Length: 183
Image 1 (cartoon, one colour):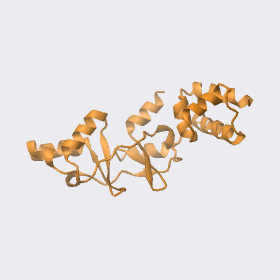
Image 2 (image 1 turned 60 degrees about the horizontal axis):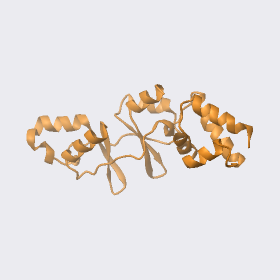
Image 3 (image 1 turned 45 degrees about the vertical axis):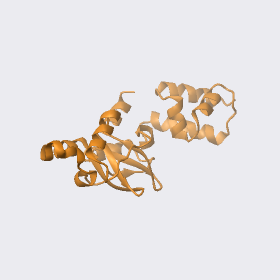
Image 4 (image 1 turned 135 degrees about the vertical axis):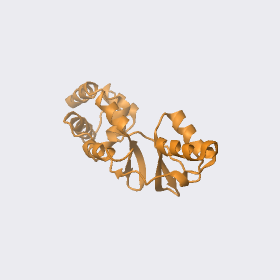
């Protein structure tokens, strides 16, 4: 076993990072991380280096979007009703949702959009379609983008989406940044 394995376990615990989160950041399974830390699996040197690099980036203050993001992302369609949006937001305790149509980002809908529709339409607001109230799509960043850049975007937008290739892999809100800081 590499002496670095003990260092990985120590750093992970010091940073308050779960095995599951480390596994997500490195791109492996949580059981693999557990077996590595328990000395029951001898990983390739490249994997050990990748694990150390991820932990050192977090420890060194350069935190990537992938560390803070929530995944999987919940989407709504432009044809969904505001009642559906309100139910999702209430059930999942979220304040904004990206709007997707045919696997393409077309907008974003927030609690404020829902409340505005209720003010304007009263009881009939529940049948309004998302397309009638949605705003522009939330900004997108790569998973490797720094949380500093994401935080600046969050000063102007309710959420930031994390996109890898063509796929939305995560969402970050102000609440996520605050939660990360309090870990």
